[in-house]
Image (tube, rainbow, N blue to C red; front, side):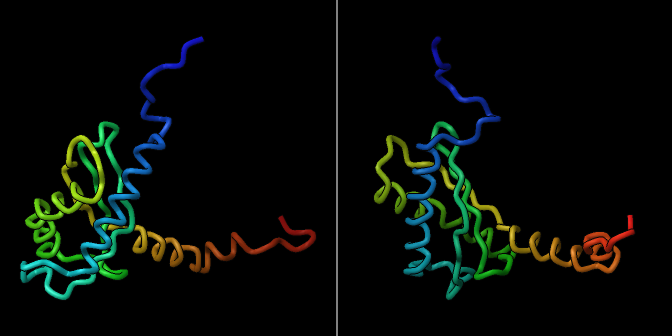
Length: 138
């Protein structure tokens, strides 16, 4: 029985996508650590690259970024888009691919979401429902 060549979207990213995305995340983190930007909106900004996702053809990558646990402003996100050609060149130098991928930036909202879930879990009505039941209670 032949295996299909292409993976379906429900199967998730391939090992190659994951490996390339991680290499790009490391490269971007190193560039952000060097703070080589001339853009005033990025001056002294500590950008954290929390995750990178690569498209199946590896021509597009989305980097999820935050500023040390807080959201980036609209101006800072716009500045990242302005410096993306520079970042793309840096990625192309460091990661050997046939094509240099287009970089897309998205704010990382995972910390904000986790804090919201934590807040919900500590509400009295939720805590009551989660408390262990005593003998004879339903």
